[in-house]
Amino acid sequence: MPMTVPVAQMRIARDINEAEKALDEALVRQSSLFTAMVTARRETGCDPFLGHEALLRLAKSQQALLEAGGNLARVHGSLLEVQKEVCGVDECPPDGERKATSARAA
Image (cartoon, rainbow, N blue to C red; front, top):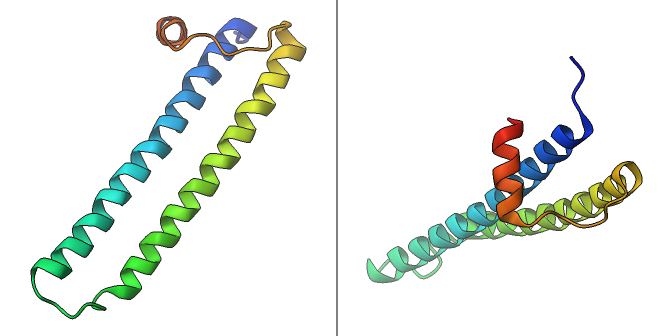
């Protein structure tokens, strides 16, 4: 059975929202890791440059997540254009409505 437009719309809205939240969560967790690494180095009396390469790699990873977030925002914008073309609507449903409807759509 083919998927209806409203069901597709709600599934996509749910998934883009979850992807955005996952990126934010990854940034928070990486920031926590960065803090833990620097704090451990400082509080254990280790050489101030111990683990520097690992910190640089983690910083690059955080930058990649920020870039991914920017690309995901552009995806979101493009999907709004598709929604406008297909449904005649050009705004996101409120988060609560999206959650309730996407639970039914799943």
